[in-house]
Length: 281
Ligand SMILES: NC(=O)c1ccc[n+]([C@@H]2O[C@H](COP(=O)([O-])OP(=O)(O)OC[C@H]3O[C@@H](n4cnc5c(N)ncnc54)[C@H](OP(=O)(O)O)[C@@H]3O)[C@@H](O)[C@H]2O)c1
Image (cartoon, protein in one colour):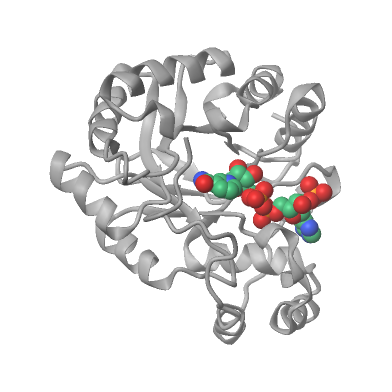
């Protein structure tokens, strides 16, 4: 392990495993360059890496993990099953494709990428996920982009609540109601596009005011806001300096008023990704 690299604290999942409270999003980091950039992130302290079969970069993530100067059991690799692989048998095949791409023998967290309700196979898919946990190929199981109704269906069918639900979450869409449902059901909230894909968010007054007050950057304020909500952000950066900046959010604390002011930026989803209607294959 590289000496002195700060690592994020961890949170306990409902199955007893632990997950870092901040990780690296890897969408668009691919090929040799992507593997190198992900390797740089691991060297600077990232332990959670978020990929998906549909990102087409599991090979780059796997290479970075295998080449890292950090033991595999200190890294937390997440991947996601695509919509076209919904179904019990399809899910059992899809994890083998993912592990083959990664060149690893297990993932730490495996998510159903989207519920795709019109296909109506996410319950069967979840049954396969429950069985996959016993196979050793997958440590923890979860979902992404699930609404409370979708969560109820898989929990009612299996008695197993997902460890994680990864959803769109940033100051423009703080997801307070969904986070409350997660808290009741013991599900950790994970935030995708936590920086709102670097929109004008970084120039919003409450973000700038908190950055000035704490002597940090706007990006650090936003990521700290996630951490204080109890949501796990996976910011993507292909830049070594911004990667380090994004991980360095454990040395200051926003006040309750600052958190509330940032949450007050709420205006709804930014990309039309309503899981009841948006589907991805
Ligand atoms: N489950 C799902 O359906 C789903 C959907 C979308 C995303 N995701 C996951 O979430 C991850 C992150 O989401 P995202 O990539 O859409 O967006 P994001 O992390 O919110 O924003 C990434 C953008 O912000 C820039 N950036 C990074 N750090 C910054 C900083 N400190 N200050 C200013 N700009 C900064 C990046 O540029 P540089 O690279 O140049 O730094 C990049 O353009 C994805 O990579 C993926 O793993 C999951």
